[in-house]
Image (cartoon, rainbow, N blue to C red; front, side, top):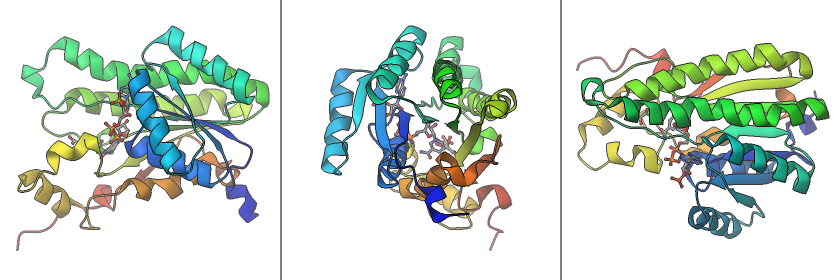
Length: 261
Ligand code: NAP
Ligand code: GCO
C-alpha cells in the first residue's frame, strides 16, 4: 500500500446535482485529492450558482445543464465530458429529492417522481458512463444511499423504496461490471445538515431532538463528514471493495436509541 493510492490525481470525476450540499462537499474533496471536477444541475441559473461557489472555493469545476432523469440529456452530457476531459473515471450518483408525505396521502405521481430521480436516474447515468469506463479499463461509481436504504419511517415511503432499491442497484452494478475493473459502492449518510434536511432542523422541531437521541455521536452530520469516505471509495485504495454500502451515520444503525432517563 502507498499513500498515493488515496490520490485522485489525473482522474475526472462527475458528481451529479452538486451545486451545493453533499455533492458539493464530495466534489470539493475530490478536487483536493487531485481530480478534475464536473457537475450538473437542472438549469443554467443553478449551474451558474454552483460554478460561483466552486470558484469561491478556488476550484476550477466544469458545470453542465442536465436533468439526470432525461436519458438523452444524460447520454449527451457523458459524451461532452469525455470529449472535453478524456474520461469519466469516477461517477457519484448524488442528485436526489425527498417528498415527506404520509403514504395514504401520497399520489402515485409524487411517488413516481421520487423513484425517478433517486433510483431511475442512477441507473440512467451509470448506464451512460459504464461503457466509457469499460473502454478505459477502470471505473468507480458511488451511489448516495441513505439510512432509508435500511430503515423505514413515517412519510418517506417513496424515498425509502428508492434508496433501498439504490442499495441493490449498487450491488448489481458491482456484480455485473466487477469483471471490468469497475467498483460500485454506496455511501449511506446519516442525518446531515443540508437544505434537504433544513425543514427537520428548525429550532424547536421535535425531530431535531429525536435525531440527536438516535445518534451516538449526539449531533447532526456535516457534509465534510462524507468527504474522507468518498475519496476512499473513489481511489485505488478501495480497489477490492465492491458492492458495499459504507454508512456514515455517527452510529445510528448500530444503536437502539437513547434509553429513557
Ligand atoms: P440537497 O441539498 O437537496 O441537494 C440535492 C441536489 O440534487 C441539488 O443540487 C439538486 O439540484 C439536485 N437535483 C435534484 N433533482 C435533480 C435532477 N433531476 N437533475 C439534476 N440534479 C438534481 O440534498 P443533499 O442533502 O445534499 O442530498 C444529496 C444526496 O444525498 C441525495 O441523494 C440525498 O437523498 C442523499 N442523502 C441526504 C442526506 C441528508 O441528511 N441530507 C442523508 C442521506 C442521503 P437543484 O439545485 O436543482 O435543487
Ligand atoms: C428524512 C430525511 C432522511 C435523510 C437521509 C437519512 O426525512 O427522514 O430527510 O431521509 O435525508 O436520507 O439518511
